[in-house]
Length: 270
Image (cartoon, rainbow, N blue to C red; front, top):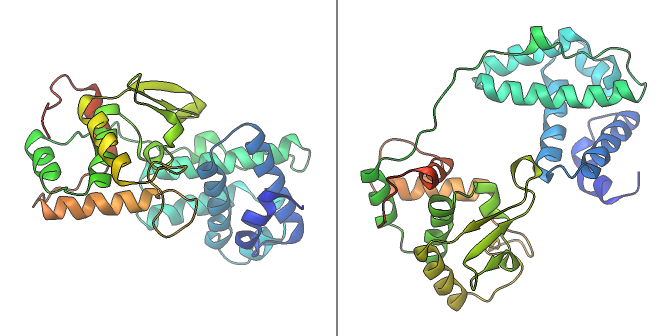
């Protein structure tokens, strides 16, 4: 398959047979036509590769040659290996869901007669965990140690505007309307477009960032990769760095910040 998807993903599919590579690339093309996010496509490739590594005995040889031979027992073995590695039930369910989507596509295409992912057998119970916003004291200490204009703006976008870390990574300058005081998020979670309003401190930080940075495509470009934006892992690393500098011992993820966007007691000063 001579297409951008093949150029992008074939190096990661080298462990599979040529027929398997075609099946996977055709499914990725299907997902692309549905306007699924690039992160979803990458996750499908990673999960299929992991499946073939974690099944026992001679099954890796069988599956890397022909994924249509996947059985319910293979999926059970995949889940057991994921549990043994310490993955959370919700994470495992997400991975199994990706596998179910791929095999359902093969079934609808007439390449499989049965779906190997069985809902009752392969769906794990997940505890209901309420969102964990950062307490005011930890939040104030966190922002107190952030001197870099870029980094402060990154975290303010999550705190004030409720943006997800992936949305912050991919923000472009043309999505920002300072005159209207808004930012447009295209193809957010669930492929939903939305417009959110900028708080005064976000607007101020944007003005300072634009004054000290020549606007290109992305609001937060990668310092090392041309025409690429910051990655989720880089923002996660920044947050860990600032939490440590602030002396905050409890771990928080960037996602915790966005829950303050819905809080009635969101601090006015950070």
